[in-house]
Length: 280
Image (cartoon, rainbow, N blue to C red; front, side):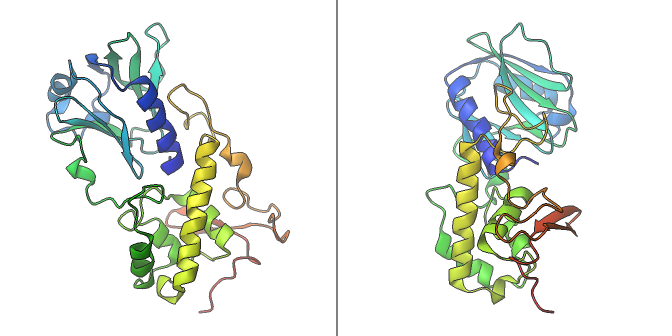
């Protein structure tokens, strides 16, 4: 699933290519991606047609495009969603679901193979859609309160990896960047939050920030054609990964083979030497 760096790459592309344009027409090619829209397909089309996109914003893994009406287009990429800006004569993508024609003639296309993601109108949601008001700020947000994050983590008995993935504590961190941050901090994902020092939690937050900034600079992580920016270009941070997806490969610090274990219907990757499993 796209995480903060991949979503931020898309947001920046939308800021460049969609902001300031008016939506001249809307075509819903499949209703599932707009299943959460309060007005259904007809209301979705009516609320967007003729509206100007005034900004491109993000909180964690969510995107929204404020409109001149005071409403917003709220988007989530899910497992395989893409938001592409294409010239009008570009061939339709195989999994094209929604097409917004912009006033400069280009098209903003929502493409989603698995259709876990989607778009919806958020009435009055230009500043912050109420649907995502519970989502915490992320590590790249100037208003993120790292002291509060440290306090809240240290009050929890859950494993630290679960806490990193808790979007009400800190948003935007997913499986890939959690594993990378934990590897950099030399922490096993099963270490309990209440058994970590404030210094260690703060250090972990710093590593998580660093890994996301690096990933953002490299266009995000693209393991296949599903993870692309608005121009269809893949990121290359996968070449810089130290833990995630490297089962059996040598740790870049000590040479021990990276190990993979099952975690919440996914996988965790770690170095058994550098990231010692907690006792008990």
